[in-house]
Image 1 (cartoon, helix red, strand yellow):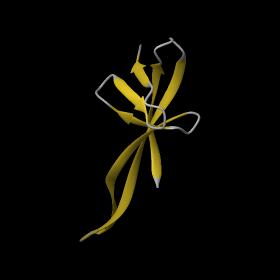
Image 2 (image 1 turned 135 degrees about the vertical axis):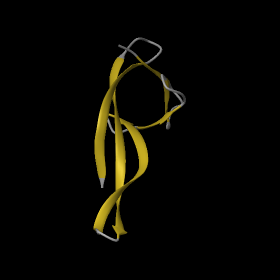
Image 3 (image 1 turned 120 degrees about the vertical axis):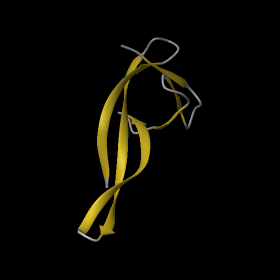
Length: 73
């Protein structure tokens, strides 16, 4: 199951603003005290559903097109 962690405002090179969402997967994990949830993989996606990868703290890339996105605010 993916949980929404945060929304990140980004701009492309033309100055067009978009919202990038960071999701975190959580996986069931059995412990001595019962079932727990362990943090799994993170993923990034635009509000349009396009997958995005993180280049560094402030720069992202749309996987399908290679277009750069930059965090602002």
